[in-house]
Length: 182
Image (tube, rainbow, N blue to C red; front, side, top):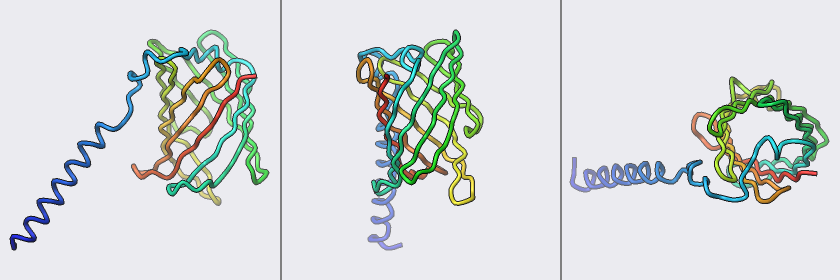
């Protein structure tokens, strides 16, 4: 191997190691939001009727879909139901009903018909972080895609939501939502 090839190989290895190291440091942690206000009480915020407006953007940032959601939310003790009715910009409609269970220490478990297994969530300060796999129908085929979902309570009535969608670790796009409590 020539010195030039050896140097190139070492430079590439160093660049990859640096990227992997910095990438591991760059992900946000739920505990970073522990002191943020206003404090999110999931059972209180997702109780009653909420309106949400959102977009799905692809990897390049292009808006692929716009949608609105009306959510009717109820709780019975530690068990919550979030009944969501979606209306997309192309006129199509979709329904998703989440069944949430509050666990200890700000943890939540969620289930819905199109969620594969369970959604696992954790709340700290003004923030809720969810991870789940969604069975997403696209052009007659159903794909299982992973969601890394972050929700931030902005005030008494407003919450912002940003979710990254990926498959096999490859980022497919993002969903951005604004919730307003009636």
